[in-house]
Image (cartoon, rainbow, N blue to C red; front, side):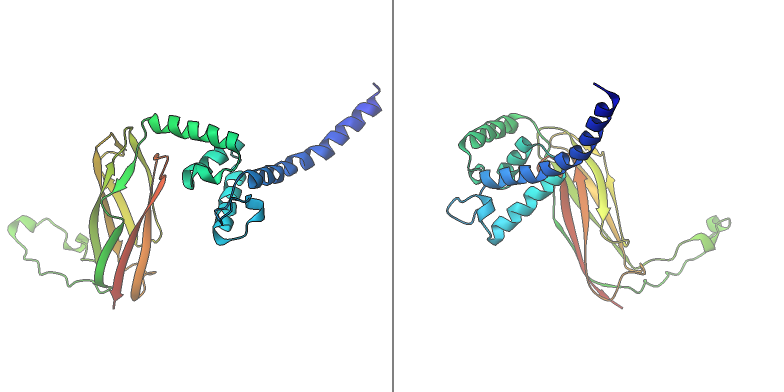
Length: 240
């Protein structure tokens, strides 16, 4: 084969390859839309359904496709999130049921919070008065200026449990607002049945805190395969 023909084949492959790659997600989506129902009634393919529930299923499938998940994993996720009955293809549904049964036998961690809401009630942005301090002989070397004044803040504790049969790893704490700080008092790796204390501090003097209702969240991420991100809500009524 002459060099001209080889060069032509290379150019042709470079031209066709991107189109082939770009076509794959669409083909995958079309195939899954035919093998899955949206729960609108009648067990019609998802491609023919337009109810609100079907739109939610479509959005979920699109997210999984964008994550480059395999077709088998997408069907598995659909079955776990909704039910195996959402899969219309009998062969695929049978394989997914076997996988779900096998997965249920494996030990897994399971995160459980003592409470999913942290209500602070009515709080004030005005810091409490500085208490009077009597200087004693023991304080003769202390530097009063370095003693921080009290702040307008609230603190609380929530217990985190591992109700599963495998080690639970607390991977991160993501507050939705800069006024919230959180730490885990205890091991970040919890064995089955073990617990740790999640300590929260909400600083109401933070410049972004406004008078009125305060509704924020703290997301706890872990290696729990069923609930990798658990959300704790934090509510308060802020006064001047």
